[in-house]
Amino acid sequence: MGKTLVIAEKPSVAGDIARAIGGLKKVGDHYEGDSYIVASAVGHLLELKEPAEYEVKRGKWSFANLPVIPSHFDLAPIKKSETKLNGLKKLLKSKEVDKVINACDAGREGELIFRYIMEATKNKKPIYRLWLQSMTKGAILDAFKHLRTDAQMQPLADAAKSRSEADWLVGINGTRAMTAFNSKDGGFFLTTVGRVQTPTLALVVNREEKIRSFVPRNYWEVHADFKVDAGVYEGKYFDPDFKKSSDPDLKAERLWAAEDAQKIADAVRGKKGTATETSKPSTSSCPALYDLTTLQREANSRFGFSAKTTLSIAQALYEKHKLLTYPRTDARALPEDYLPTVKEILSVVAQTSSLGKFAQKALKDNYVVFTKKIFNNAKISDHFAIIPTGQEPKSVLSEVEQKIYDLVTKRFIAVFYPPAQFLNTTRTTVVEDYHFVSEGKVMQHPGWLEVYGRTSEDSGSELVPVAKGETPLTVKSDALGLATKPPARYTEASLLSAMENAGKTVEEAELRDAMSEKGIGTPATRAAIIEGLIAQSY
Image 1 (tube, rainbow, N blue to C red):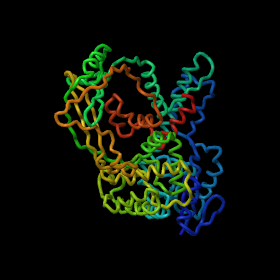
Image 2 (image 1 turned 30 degrees about the vertical axis):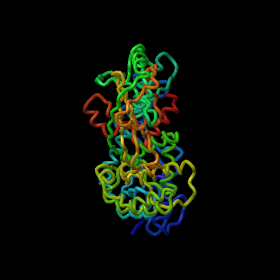
Image 3 (image 1 turned 90 degrees about the vertical axis):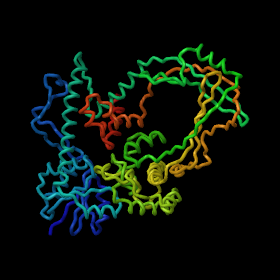
Image 4 (image 1 turned 60 degrees about the horizontal axis):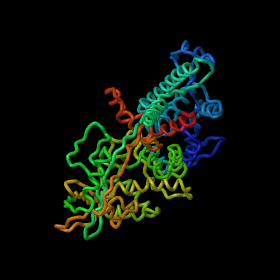
């Protein structure tokens, strides 16, 4: 019986796979044993190259040479990686090898890296797919027991090649057309265009145009302080007969003339009124588990990390430390048969993490139960949500790694906790026929917020009580001059959200439906797109 050649995407992953299999020795830059050879690429080894008849020198870029639509695509080795490609070619041609396992990253890009190697080396040997969700030894060995066939992976391979060729066609033709346009008066002004890059740039430009064309509108609000025996509470004037309109600037509490606001402030000052209130219970559930985009958004909002930084940290926690599952995912759910695994992971977290007491409580109080919000096969495509693997950290994490690991672990624990419970109070104080609203929110049970350090003692904004029959006295009332504000510029967090939801804003119905679930870019590529726009000074 011959040997099986396993090709990973990176040398570090090849090392992990070799250690999991066991009994393999390092031979040059690959690992070899009686039954397996484990080798690796270093990311992409090949790239699309236009056929020679389409090559045009830089200075000749013009509309006359467009469009560039080759009848076929050639592959060219990436210069710096040629040695690695030749090494893999030699192993693939070896008579010892009778089958090949694709162990590149389990996603579209990993599939493309492997398929291009197969195409360039003209491999005819049987192919299987190792689909890794986690880099722990147990997960690797389990994946070897459930290898996917070449036929099962063909749709993903087709999608990967189609996307690569579409990117090439849009990039070459768009870039040459825009460069020709911008260089028509002389000189050479390279203007890059990309299938994902350009719509993302359009989001930023459209927002900037709204900001620059924005004309602020002045408005006024009336704020008052009311005194009762128990203390003082604040209120804001509102029009009880206000009806929403298509103008987003119009709101119940806004007045559009200074004299109207001043008139109300003067009329109620020093006067007594009546107060009525309603209290309604409300709940707040923990958000779903993280996919890559929501993790990047939260890390940007909380810590100021760029999308690229968060991805590289999460990748290190997956690949190097084996503490997180595969990070380049767009899913926020877990497989429906994953409940026993979740309990095992929480048991380890309970013993090893600073968040252990919360994991312990989740298990002890039977919070960890099956719900479709968490366990849902219909909401998983290639990969499930990012969660801890249940491994104990083998080395000390850096400060930034610890922050991302804790973020994921907290969400993983909190998602099983019950909802937080609040009592929302709305008080209306009427003075001289003018209505003022005061709102209070009191936490009654922290639920999942306990994992984030909140307790029932963090009562929130509780309103001082008004005794039955008591008439609040207006001790202070002011007309405040304010102005409407333009939309905020994008942060990386809000731009990631805009990219993710871009499909919902498309006017053409069929395209909107096609894009509604995906937006532009993928969780794995959005960070690089943003970095590219910055690098090109766009």
